[in-house]
Image 1 (cartoon, helix red, strand yellow):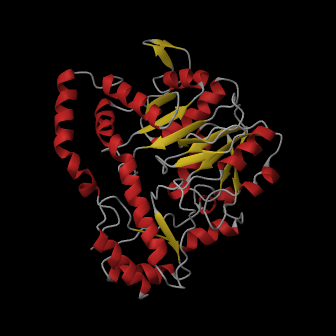
Image 2 (cartoon, one colour):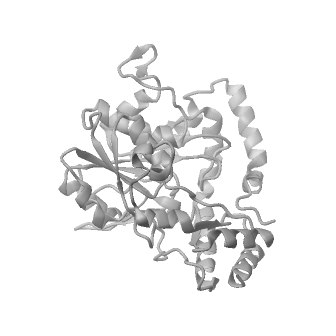
Image 3 (spheres, helix red, strand yellow):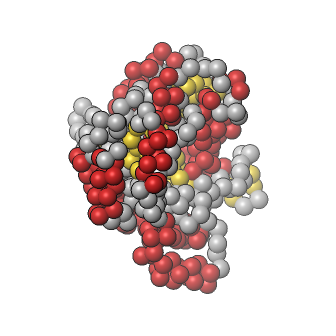
Length: 379
């Protein structure tokens, strides 16, 4: 069986270094908010060309804390509306609700699966105060268009970058073109946003447990977030905000420090496999993803579509190829949201009914890729 994702194989090269780091952390006797986290926050901020990085317990908390940070600063208020793609993992929407904000769903583009900028403006009301952009499957959304809409309507731009570590955005500017991993701030120099990352083990940069982070260039927001993640306290036992306990621990930070230097190389391997799939899969029953071959995609997932998905997935399993569906049910059809169940988002529903994710990872062998392509072409 070719596994969908072999985490044991991905982490095997780090085993000796992990064990050494674990001993170091144990012997230091400092397990929360210590040197390993401080090092990771600085290194990951530099990697993302951001001024600040705030480590959190997981990617979901990172999103929730961004919203709560803006509420603490008075830039958002409970009950404000937040534009969010209808086609996303449910965590994006749950984070908005956890902050007592109102999600407003917008259809994606069928070709890219990311939010359709051309449909955002019509959903904006006087209560709309932010856009939550989701870089789904590892591909950046159309941030230049989205940022222009945000600036025009005085909206905050927040990014769910849980699947897009290291994707590079080329930002149009009157004077220059800025390339930076994931930080896709608007063209207005004093306009700041924030991005939330997950280090769940299956991510392109994965820990050995839960972990997350926020990056931003907004000093005022960063200061609040450092407190909010730690019970709302900047100084121990003195609490300025109603905060939470969500901190990236020393052990996970230490492991991430070891893996971060290899992230670009791992992403390039994913892109190379993606290029092979796109060039060599030739079957009119399969719809391939759209990619412009820039570095705006890190192929966290390689997602194909088929109108006969169940049959295709069974066929691949019979040929020892494991696949996963990301995701079988759209958020608005989930039992958790009964008030939304009768809503119609036909593009989102089509995507969720047809998508199937193929194996793609830095440890997938060339012959395995060739076999997958051969089997799909015979379907």
